Amino acid sequence: MIRKDRIVMSASPHKVFVYGTLKPGGHYWPQFCEGKVSEVQPAMIRGELYDLHVGYPGVILQGDGWVQGCLLTFPREADFLQLDVLEGYVPGREESKNEYNRLKVPSYTPEGETLGEVWAYEMTEATMQRYTGTRIESGYWAI
Image 1 (cartoon, rainbow, N blue to C red):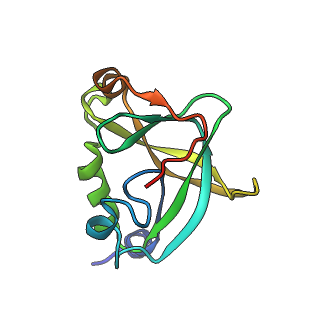
Image 2: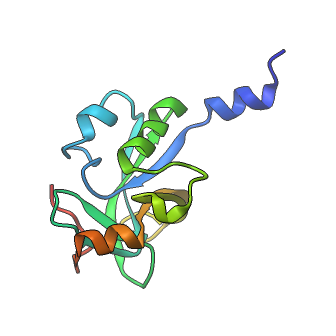
């Protein structure tokens, strides 16, 4: 027997804020997003963006700064969950053992209007220490 709540849950879109290599034109866009995303919307979240000097950035969800990126909508949960693999995130694992952790955060349009809560990947303290990131004051990662 199929429960209706499971059908609704699996059919609901998954929204994630991306700020680096998953943005359109980014290195991982073709593999993880192209043909799998139903909507791309410019967006921003509160935090600090860091250049990790390894070809991709990281975010720390603190402070009053703005991180600029895109809000991606994944209709299929399976496609959305592939981002966890890329980001080195395993749900339920001790947070410090992940490279990034997936968290719900408030998101906004570039004009400051609320878009609601979405997923975002925050680098762990261990990741920050390993790469000795440099803060990107503009909050924008250039592809």
